Amino acid sequence: MASDATAELAIYPGSFDPPTLGHLDLIERGRRIFPRLLVAVLRNAGKQALFTSGERVDMLREACAAMDRVEIAEFDGLLVDFAQERGAGALLRGIRAISDYEYEFQMAWMNRRMAPAVETVFMMPGEAFAYLSSRLVKEVAAGGRSVAGMVTPAVEARLRHKLHLA
Ligand code: PNS
Image (cartoon, rainbow, N blue to C red; front, side, top):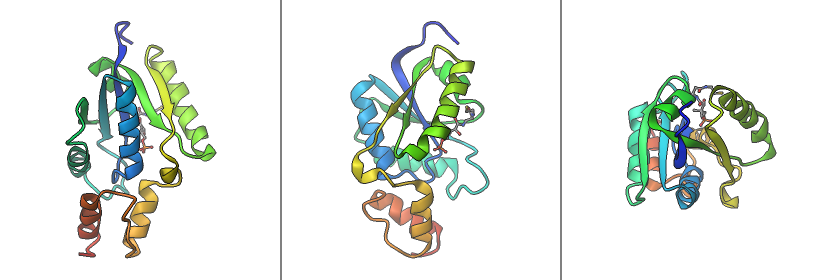
């Protein structure tokens, strides 16, 4: 790991399939702490990904258009390698319920093992988003129910289109 990495730049990685208001809440919180925040979309987010990485990037760019110091990029391979390439000093992750801890700690320990200079920083989203996840949003939308208040109207429209509901 580059020894000159600083927390001037933090990376907020994820699948964002699709981005939710919980993700946007975390981006807002993250940008209050870090001078620059790079939202990094995992290119190959598994076979079950509903949206292409390009679509996920577009949705995030639309949603973050008014947020200065926030950039959106795609990555593949190891997150720590991407962080190293970009000179990021921190990885930002959202923790909702206790059930998130196990998975998040496994990743954070492994990432630290590979890149000790890159610090993982956990933040809590607002309470309203404590039980919100992209997976549940997709299920609710696929069932024909409204996901208003969980995603932006633009993302909701894309979901309806993708799921052939509109
Ligand atoms: O939104 P998600 O699906 O919870 O995000 C998971 C993500 C993208 C952060 C994680 O899967 C990841 O970092 N993938 C890249 C591959 C990698 O670095 N794996 C080792 C993690 S210890």
